[in-house]
Length: 69
Image (tube, rainbow, N blue to C red; front, side, top):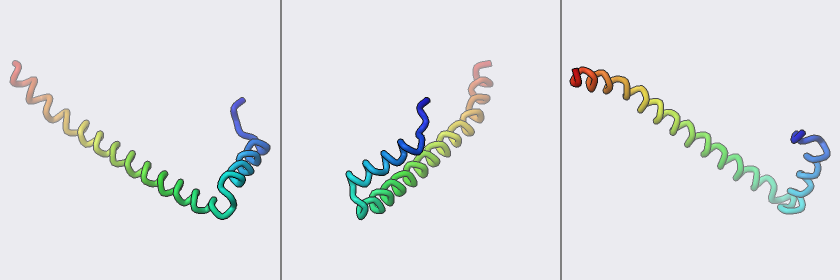
């Protein structure tokens, strides 16, 4: 229903060529790749930080329950 077929992809490529020109496309793709790489690195760091927080949390909870009894 919402998939891209060959005619749609060809149309998108033609619009990109008209907007940026053939000489500018490699530069645009390089910037897009760099941005995607930075996004993946940042998301990986965020996941690692969240995992380390979650792993530390169970160690603190048993001490709190013991003091309440």
